[in-house]
Image (tube, rainbow, N blue to C red; front, side, top):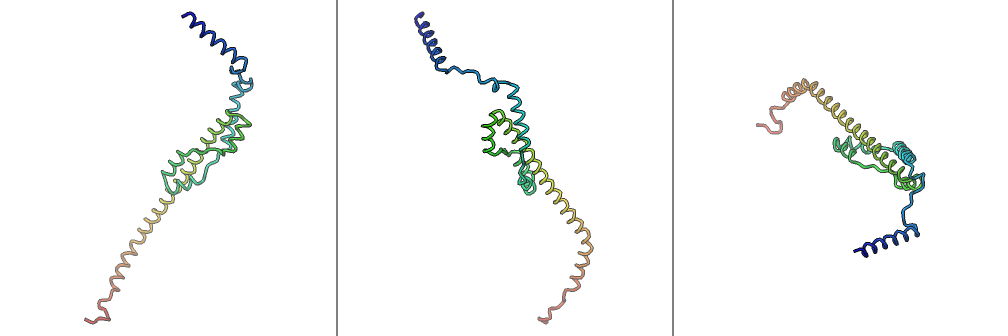
Length: 167
């Protein structure tokens, strides 16, 4: 049993020594990447840039207008993403922390704008429908008197005999 323990210790020692010689043991990254303050600054910068670059799509407004609640639900479940070329550029120039914050902030802010557009479209359709029905009801009330007088005129003007066929 003592020989097995010694063999295991020997194998572990040799593998540690070999990996240390060939640089396979992970070394800490450069100090500027492990600095928590620098990482937080990158995150905050990415968040601010993502919010600034976010843009909604006016098509969600038309969706809210024509589809109502379904247009708003569609805007709520949408997942707008920034342009892939820009994300790739930011990843190479700013780092992964910046890109994660940028993408997250861009998605949240764009979704808010899309929801706003769809809600405004839905509200406009409700307003337009309400105005239409109020106008329709008011025109029916004013035509009520005209309808009864027109019916009397139509009844009075009906011919009693057909001139082509004499009875």
